[in-house]
Length: 415
Image (cartoon, rainbow, N blue to C red; front, top):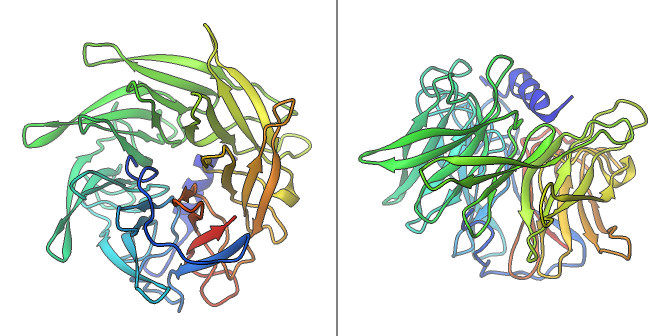
């Protein structure tokens, strides 16, 4: 099962009660001592269980820092039943305080921000997507793009665009990126009759103009942009580049076509990330068609002309974690960090770290932190790094009563 089918099943069957640009560039100003390769749970969602998780439940996205060291993220459920946007702030006593900035109602304001991280602009506004809602109440609406603006001690939501279910796409998933002109870019997952899309939203008068710039089965993978303004992403079988054509449009180029390997469908996932030399790194989810291999981390390198060069740099087996659904993050030394949704000692997923490359370009595992359940399970989002090299992320389930069935957690890992 590919990840889109998996998350549609998850969103459709899970009930819970009635149920950045700036993200990776700012530095966390507050650090705390911690032991080597240790995990600290910063917040437990819905830790008391029950039907009404007003603080949110099921965080599925990565997090975003602001310049003061506060963390921002989303939950797919909880709040009024349809998910939340939240802030975690250091409380000055070594802990963190959670605040719900917006609780989705399931109607015009959107519903279920799945894998949708939020980004910050220079004025402190947050931008993100919600999978359902908009023109109709969830689950009949096709999703929205939203903006949250600080107003005094509260936040105001503005719906920038509601998807109509036509050529504009359906079900925006994952987060957004913003260019230097303030234009927003994202992806829609699509459904059985409507393909996924890459879209652009541009400020226009008092509103925003939507443009579909590429139609492709993205399966909800995210986007990244290089310094020249070219956009990179992955579809079900390809990695692609979108380049501005100078007339307001975009030229698509397939830079690599993934090939079936060891009877495993590639299924590239998450968001690609650049290293300092212009190489791209990503992950594949893995599908069982024979002997199971649980996905891999790969590198794509530009060539003089033609497709980019592909290199499988690490292959997952169950004891090391399997099915990495999110992308990876690189530290200043070139070490690679990420999460797998499953595998590890308790089959609850892992945080992994890779060091390399060796003489043949392969990496080896330098860090593996297994989720046990009470400390989180099934991490679906990628990680972010602070200035001290600590990792922060979310696990979509676990925590709570200690039996692994809680509403998910926000965690910190010290490599």
